[in-house]
Image 1 (cartoon, rainbow, N blue to C red):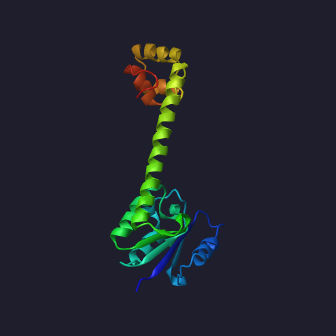
Image 2 (image 1 turned 180 degrees about the vertical axis):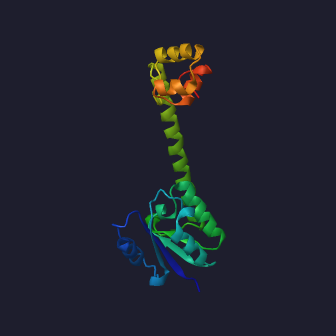
Image 3 (image 1 turned 45 degrees about the horizontal axis):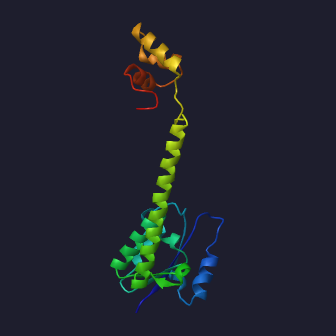
Length: 196
């Protein structure tokens, strides 16, 4: 006989899982109290690094049902969630997400839903990359150089070269210009400012 488990997660100790329990009960799933697993951990933590979920996964058997209120309970992003659902499906576990109408994510309709979510996530990621690259190009065209400001001005770089030519040590120049030895060595080696 299939057993039903619930995985509930909150981000901070001040939060409670009571609303998640009520949602699961109201949706018609019957979960015995000893099969409700709660975890207090940030949603940015990958599912593989969540100790309570790992213990839950060890308890699950083929035919069991896992209920969550939202997809973010199963991973930190769409890719993590998809991998979690695929792993559970491979083990014969059905996964129901209430935020998606209680659909079993391991069913054909659930797989389609997961595919659509992953496609949207990938699209958003690609848009972010495009916007970032466009912003960098605009900044460069306007004469701004994104990134960390140069540690040494052009005049200071010239002074470093002159002092090195007179025999000054890298360490003494790093102290004099209040910078790292690596910065002085990059000047010595002719590495342009802003590159490493």
